[in-house]
Amino acid sequence: MATFGAANTNPNKSYEVAQPPSDSISSLSFSPKANFLVATSWDNQVRCWEITRNGTVVNSTPKASISHDQPVMSLNLDYNILIGKMGIIAIVLCSAWKDDGTTVFSGGCDKQVKMWPLTSGGQPMTVAMHDAPVKDIAWIPEMNLLATGSWDKTLNESCGVVRYWDTRQSNPVHTQQLPERCYALTVKHPLMVVGAADRNLIVFNLQNPQVGSIEGRVGVHHLDDAQQSKNFTFKCHRENNEIYSVNALNFHPIHHTFATAGSDGAFNFWDKDSKQRLKAMQRCSQPIPCSTFNNDGSIFAYAVCYDWSKGAENHNPATAKSYIYLHLPQESEVKGKPRAGATGRK
Image (cartoon, rainbow, N blue to C red; front, side, top):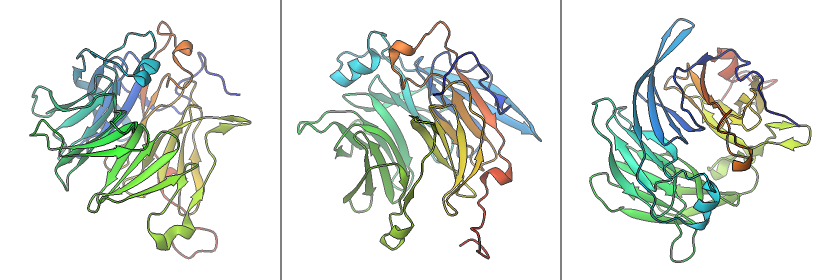
């Protein structure tokens, strides 16, 4: 069984980001246009750094930050379980960039989504509201809409919703009920995939709102019926009989391989086509709750901190420290390899 203590949080000798959050990091996201990195965290903050690279030397400069500080007036049962007796009212759980790289959206336990015109120096404003914590968000440039996934409980006892917002209006343009609480969502137009509690993976066609559901173990699933024979699952982030959660999965923007990061403190690079692991990195001494590639895949950012997988009773604020590291992937780590006997990749 893996144990976490005062051991090395940076065994892979990655570059450390300056002035990281003072509490656990919930999300990381790079601007789609430049090397601006945004982190959200359990200390109610949204922070931005400019990342610069000169050869193999990487530097980080804090640029700006905002707070989610609106008091929560009423709490549902799930939210009470989440925060226990910690008294935290505005934990920021997620962030997303607008496609032009000018604006950041952030959401969290204050049940609101803020729009932050970061590059122009403007002030954040609230553009969406829910009745429960907002767990994930995505900007859909093809529709000029913001999608927000939450733990709202609707009249038919559904335990989660996705709402679509025109940020110029105060009410959502559409609300999609979910079978369970939303934990993650991602959009590649015209498809949106939502990961919900009770092992629900729900696929929405944004041009034709019909729903398909895939339940079971995490794996690689092709949505094209003609490609179903290529579906597979794989085991990862395990040590002996100990099974750890997979906290993040990020596709490389150029090579279309992907990285996973988990509660075991490890991150690995995988090739789905050859069904093999390209590189297993050394385990950090704390979990990795989130990770992301920059827009050209030359930088892989990951957070090392307590991920709350073992509850509030195992969190010690006096000794806990959060880190953000920047890894420069080698081509051999992220570029897929031909399968044995193949003359070339298709």
